[in-house]
Length: 476
Image (cartoon, rainbow, N blue to C red):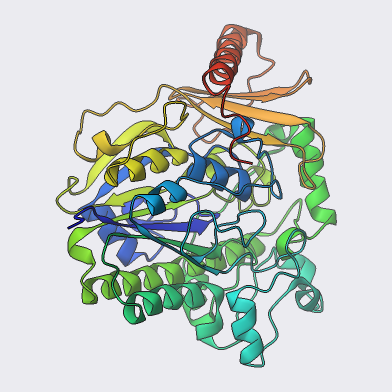
């Protein structure tokens, strides 16, 4: 009999670390994620490898950094993953919701895929009909989309925040949650262990909660960003150009504002948090169904997100920067009998470290060249140290247009962002400036620290290029 654990991997899209009550954010209602946090392990310093969906997710499911996979931006092709190893070993592998493979319908090792992709697809895959598209069509409903939002008289002032006006069960996050519960309820329980990936489309914009979830947040005081002229003056030209670009092109139904009002920012954050509460409720339903169907007594639940969202912090919209509001994400592992209760690990890790952790939980070997590291030890050991440094990368795309390639290196005390072949960059003293408001790149007194991090970046790239020399193109 195969007694390996069922593994449930829940991934949201674009969820900041500071959006879960138990992680120190009292402004949001997340009772089910709070429960997982109380009864599991919280990784307080988990960082993604790329500040956009596709390269971040590719790293998670391959174990390699973007420069190794060659997946450096949204739209880059990736078709293989460690899910294939799980399947070969006897796991039944199911995907419900978003994975963001390219192309969307790539099998990736799953036995079954119930694909639900971006709410406002506009570039790649715009005319791909996913499960949600089909359900809307059967119900005779028209999918909310950019062309329809543009008809609103206040469209440009909404910062991507819109009310959900269709039936509640057709909201994409509700739809994905209910589909996952339906699969667990209606499908015969597999003879062997189950790997179930549940990808919620939210809280990625459009920020579109059902109104009754938004009402409490609209009435609640929320922390809002304050961006000084000095901070903006110290930002790299590539970021300032992107900031302007986002006011001119409405990516994901957001017309960015250079100087939004407090009312605009409050509504945007209220709707964003309401989306998270809706997802949390669906997670509660999924946990209940796992329990009712007899999965929960031998199950590991992992919760994370692919990157964060500026929501106006630093004067920016969405992602594509290297601020902690983007690169730091929640990571919670709930595994009764396999991990400590409410263990808070503050060591640095990369979100892609989930991959080898899953492989070890499944009793499978970790491929030698992997750039990711298993977190299994951290589930039991409160003395776990973690990584010394974490990294992230991204190339030029349709939004980040004024740099060929940017790379972040971060340790506990300092962060550096490098722009290929450019004299500018970013350097932050995280101990004295955790808000990352004061760029020290050109400060003479910080020249030594800047060079130390640049040296670290160089050695990291050389070392990894050698270690992964035989697999560099294996995951395309």
